[in-house]
Amino acid sequence: MSKRAGMTLLCSALLVVMSGCGDECKDPSDCTDDKGSPSEGKVWACESNKCVERDSTNPGPADGGTGDGGPADGGDGGPADGGPTDGGDGSDGGPSDAGMSVGKGGACTSSVECMAGLRCEDSTGGRTCQSLHVAVTSAGTAGTQATAVRHDETTTAPAALSESTETNRFPRWSADGSAVAFVEGAEGVGSSRLVSRTLPLTVGQSTALTTGTAAETEDFPQLEWWPSTRLVWTKKSGASTSGLWSVPGAGGTAVALTASGVFPSWAMNGTSLAYSTNAEGLRTLTPGQPAATVAGGTGGEQPYHNQANDWLLYAKANGSDAVIGPLYEIFTIPPTGGTGNLIAATASEPTSGGSVDSFIANQTWAPDGTWVAYVRTYFSNPSDASPSALCGAAGASQCPGRDANVIFLRKINPQTGAGDGAEVQLVSGGTLPSFSPDGRFVAYVRAKRLQIQQINPADGTPVGAAVQHSLGTDVQTNRGDDHRPRWQPR
Image (cartoon, rainbow, N blue to C red; front, side, top):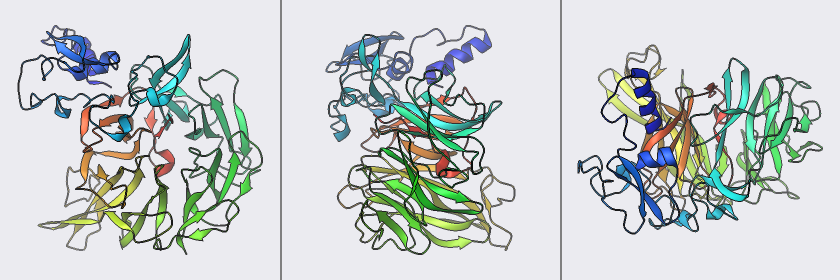
């Protein structure tokens, strides 16, 4: 829910006239929340509590005309004001800004013209820039289902993607963002199947891609589609989850790619992929060639390609806790192998009765390879031999009232793959971070709700308040990356 929407609901609930409830804005970010992006070459200004468009070269008072001059916005008109640094118009000099000049609803011919968080779509009267969708697996009174919502739309409940009354899950986008695939039916050979639908959703239109019987699998875990024309997943058989399979995005014959391996990740060419095995660690597979082990990737797990230079981000255990299990750190490595760069390590904070320790989970790339996001998971490690416990859980004696999960970002040097500067905390209590295709927004799940946070691409700091999607059903997180929010490609 946006800041202004939240204020509107508060005023309605109290049924009283409160100072500020009738105001259109308090700062420029309120205008963005309520009215969307300004016209091309314009920025929002808040003057006398009204939203006014100003030329971007002469925006008026730096603090939006509120005259408060307080430290919260510094009077500099920058990210601390709560509004976008430049709205994606290129004034911050960031590489992702090139061509991003058309605002929401503006005419376009290609998505590269659209501002951050938007894509060029067909609409009545032509093509316009519209907000990207985010798809998740939710659970509520209708059961578990794949749903999608535009990332900045908080007044409409997410749309159910499947037309089936059966359980459905794991929504994944096609490379051009025009279709979404997901799994329908309960787990079990013959019971589950892969289907896809095109956008905008049309009643009675769905394409069957393959079935659990044809793919010899009880489910389709670790499913991936973008940026390939094919879907890939890991075969599930009883207690075993291993071996990669694939099917064309238009449907057809499912084929086995490997006899073992997990966590497939498509390379930027959409035909090669990375995965991991217990014995070899990181591996790559190129069509027509034998699978290859990534030199230096021994012990690596859960590889992820970025879409700029194919560097791999992966996890590797550094010890284990009797209760918590493996304690992971994350690294980057060139796709051809080499020496891994440690990006986020395990840590220990001493306390009077032991320590608060942490490990890394749910890592992911920004598509352009300039940032990674991950969850640092904290747990209580008492010195009296009592068992460890995740912070926030019963028995977490060393960290009462502390969140177990905290999302961090870290900037990456695109030439060396090494971390560039310290990690930046994004939000406490969140999990499963996911970057938008332009790298300007991070979706995550907090308190079972989808939230979207814009970030400054220069330093990773939050820009404005997070958009909180409070409508709809509970977003699922219990299957890790399987339930990570998925952005519609541009």
